[in-house]
Image 1 (tube, rainbow, N blue to C red):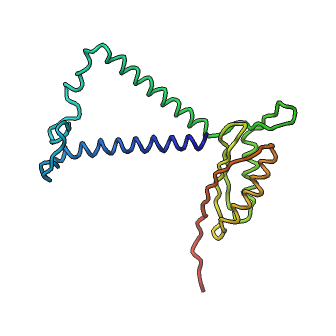
Image 2: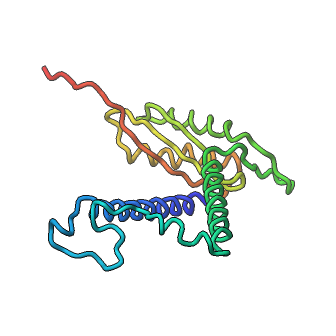
Amino acid sequence: MGGILRGVNRVLLALTGLLLLALGLSVLVGGFDLPRRWNFSMPADWPWTAPQDVLLSDADRTRWRAESWWWPVVLAVLGVLVILLLWWLLAQLRRRRLGQVLVESGDGEGALLRGRALENVLEAEAAALPGVDKAAVRLAGRRSSPQAVVRLLLEPHAAPGPVLSRLTDEALEHARGSVALEQLPAEVQLRTAKHRPERVI
């Protein structure tokens, strides 16, 4: 779910950015009177070719108001847009933090563990690894298939490879085993702590 949502976010942001960029450039072409200055022509039905052109004329804004289908179409489009935006907002909120994790207890029902408790344990074990200065952990996903987002602040001279290996083999593996999960996907973000310049004598 997290990967799909990230993909949807990127596609939406890319499409929105391209649309706004194209709209802005097309307005600038007319606003700066570039067709006349640079001696090139725009398509015959291009709306903005000179500084005096407006984005929407009175005729454009009122063209379809007398048509019986106009307002139902407008309301339907706005309704679909609102539903999509609400879905996107709820999906973002669901990603933020996992409240509970389902632990298989062997009786077919399972038990619920507070997500924050598992985050604290995983965070403490990650922070205790050699080369790690600070650690922060957040659980996302569903309670039956959680995902961990781990942020590590490494000490100035720590090697990322060994730290990542021990995090995977020790901290994440212990957390996965403690709640009887088949897998515990993790996204690990590494940063290095700044240190003062060393004086060479």
